[in-house]
Length: 80
Image 1 (cartoon, one colour):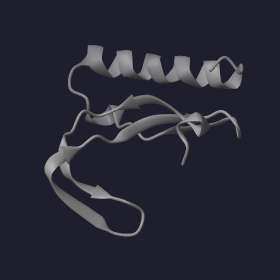
Image 2: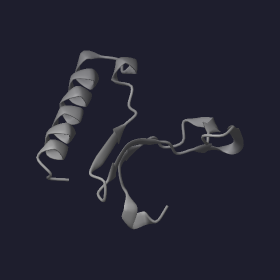
Image 3: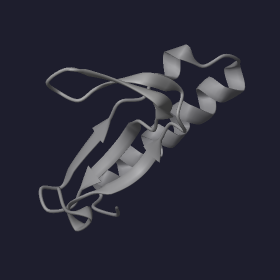
Image 4: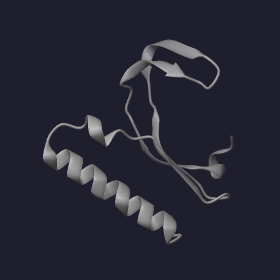
């Protein structure tokens, strides 16, 4: 997929050496970066794969929920 077809909005910085590519599991010597939030401008689609329930501490959880709500509002108002 061409880079102009999507915008990465959030990703992990290499926390797992396993990755599911849609067909099978890939294992690497180095951890993969994983997409958490992606936006497709041509189809106006937003994909969120975050896991705020896995955050520890009230502040981290609240900040993540607030960030996701802000992203969703921007998406719905066509501000992305």
